[in-house]
Length: 143
Image (cartoon, rainbow, N blue to C red; front, side, top):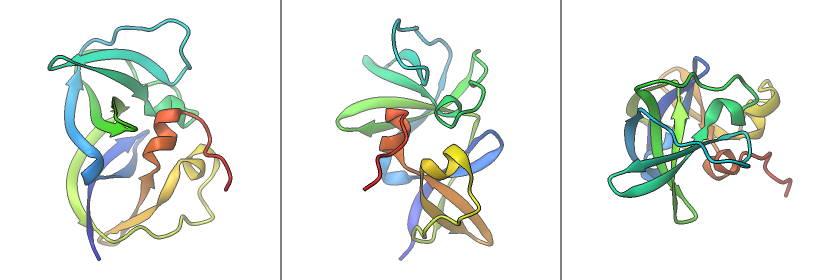
């Protein structure tokens, strides 16, 4: 069975998010910093009278932070009844792709830790992100 996925880019790598988990795609112009939060929490952003916690996907993955400035791309998701804006480098499209398959062993470091599998988009394999783990900003616990 096929599913719909939002394809975004983080550090020039395509990643997939289940479209059912995505509320919207937005541009963020200003993030309000919050003291004493974990490094992956960039701050807060108000969207239509709703406060979103902004998560820097690059920091979660152990990379340099996304450059702050006007028009930062973000994907709005809800995890455990709370709204989040996941900063990404770019948003490409919503596509129909294959059901997730296990991750290949060649993935390294944080990329593998935050992967929920891979989906096929034509000939390309695209990493499916584990949204709750990304939002938490911590390596998923072993089962």
